[in-house]
Image (cartoon, rainbow, N blue to C red; front, side, top):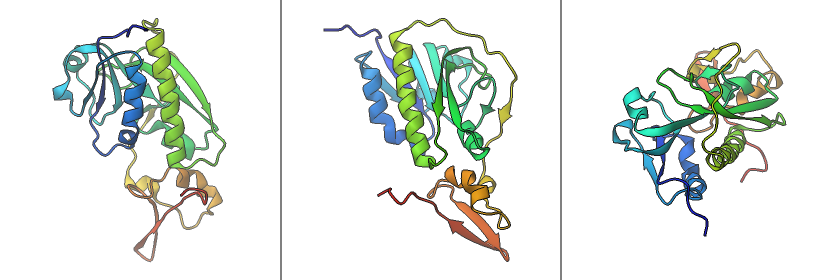
Length: 219
């Protein structure tokens, strides 16, 4: 029987409405291949000491005192750091016409998205994926990166280098369609709209209208 490499592996998701929760069982299964103890924290104040903490969906930046409770604190960011630091990088990049995404697995620091990176993975897109498709593609590739990281642990870190750019936090305003543009011109924006939480919308004569998009093959 293969021995487990870690005493415990932990997860924090402090956004209780995060889409990441729908994958939590699969994430636990991935980590369980390397430990007999997987703990999930919903608030940074509840973090306990452990080996590796995976920061999967957090609205709050962890303080140094929180990060010191684990040997490593891992974030997977959907951009080729240091390019695309900040919020919702893959939404911004798809809206801007990206044909691929890059995932960066890196060490968390108190300064946003500043830590040394361990692994990167390029994900090709076909240009037709909607938001749920992209989420699934991202999380499946995150599982692979997590497994690769834990299998090869410890991995030599790489200092970030290159041009640093930042994305701002998306708001409801970013999901507004321009009624003077075609659907084709705004298709990439439609692809990253969440039909339930932040749907596409437009205004005519001061009245707001909601527009939802789905693939005809989705059940």
